[in-house]
Length: 183
Image (cartoon, rainbow, N blue to C red; front, side, top):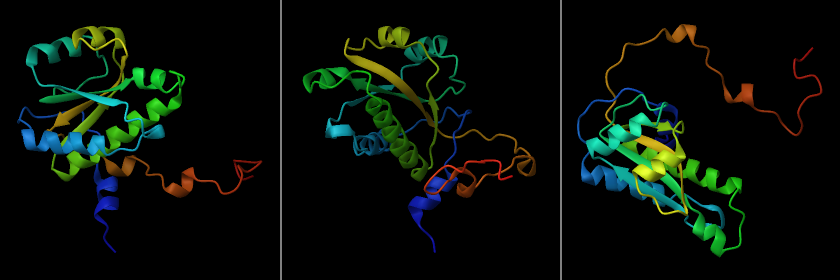
């Protein structure tokens, strides 16, 4: 039985090399809309997206983002608006915000994949520098960049040398066994 959603989950990959082929405004808007549809804790909708396409601004971001190997046509920054946490008397350090960023990023990555585009998340960057470069409001916390573009052709690696794990390798039922080694 074929299932488009499950197939997309299995086939989507993190891409570290992208071409300079432009992303259309229509594609970008569909991806941003997918991020909007991600569920958020308390339905606060605190995720904010900053789309960066300007080459000068991207060069500044590269300088403060050692984990950004891609040179994509589009970079989407996913932020949390902490003012909503303050307004609803929630703690600013709740893991909910990071979970919500991850859900938005996954929605956007799957939407991009469905449109023939590639994505690569980046969390290795200076939050202070990025906030300054992008002139973020004080209550916005930058959490993740999602690089967006078309995957560059890369040489295939030896798949046989890479051991695939299954869900069974990662799953325990009811309790963790007292002897995880099985012996």
